[in-house]
Amino acid sequence: MRAMVLQEVGRPLVLEDCPVPTPGPGEVLLRVEACGVCRTDQHIADGELPPPRLPLAPGHQIVGRVAALGEGVEGIPLEARLGVGWLGGACGRCKYCQRGQENLCREAVFTGYHRDGGFAEYTSVRADYAYPLPEGLPPEGLAPWLCAGLIGYRAYRLVRDRKVLGFYGFGAAAHLLLQVARHEGKRVYAFVRPGDEAAKAFALELGAAWAGDSTETPPEPLEGAILFAPVGALVPKALADLEPGGVAVLAGIHMSPIPEMPYRLLWEERVLRSVANLTREDARAFLAVAPQVPLRAEVEVLRLEEAERALEALRRGGTRGALVLIP
Image 1: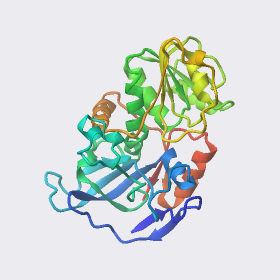
Image 2 (image 1 turned 60 degrees about the vertical axis):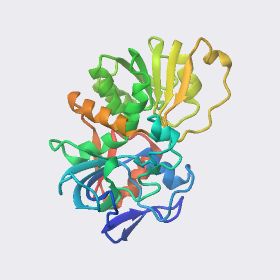
Image 3 (image 1 turned 120 degrees about the horizontal axis):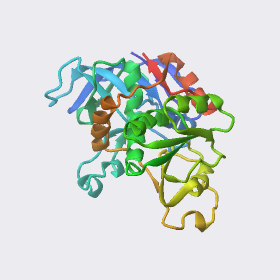
């Protein structure tokens, strides 16, 4: 099979001919229909996260068809459409798993990081960490649901009780969660990279109440904020935009350093918190909501061998919606 492989951190991915994996006990083999390209893939390739297992096929927004079953897997028919996200497994025994925080498990395994992901024609995954997906949408439209959607939704749930929200950075995750927030009656203000008029127009097109540069002040104080952009300098700005008692959520796995800031930005019981990974419960909740919206992903489709071009597009910024590879 063909796969785009990271051989060395900081070096371009390489197209290789690799053996088709054999699913182990409790696993299924997926024939990849589509795989979204996430900023986390870029962070892994660039060495901004601790070194992954190498060599590695990245990719953790996988839509695939079941091609084979590993020992002990029952109730999943061949050719069933499944989705796979970032969390590829957890121990199930530790205190985090036992209290519903498998996203914090010290033995957690992540797709496209600890094990090969979807930048390939086939991949094997744990059956209990794969999710049934609807048949009525094209695979490239479903792929962004599996990370931009899932982890974005985990961040959104932390401010779901608020009515006035700010989204900082308007890429793959924000464009999906704006649709969910609008469906649930929220008023959303979108903050984009200074000068990115296309992103402003895109946010307004999807129903944002206002769109402006990340340096601008929103029309009213925010009750909640989600930082999708991995820019530490936006943290004090988001806190300054919040009303007393507001909540700011950092949705990324990596962020540039947060600058020193005065305590008054946190005072009056403002809350600053991060999101780490996701749980299967998050996935089930999001996949139940998405068809009700109905959620539609804006995507640019690329060939598998264009994976490095996709990563470079994320480095530059300014992409509209999500980038998706088709093997």
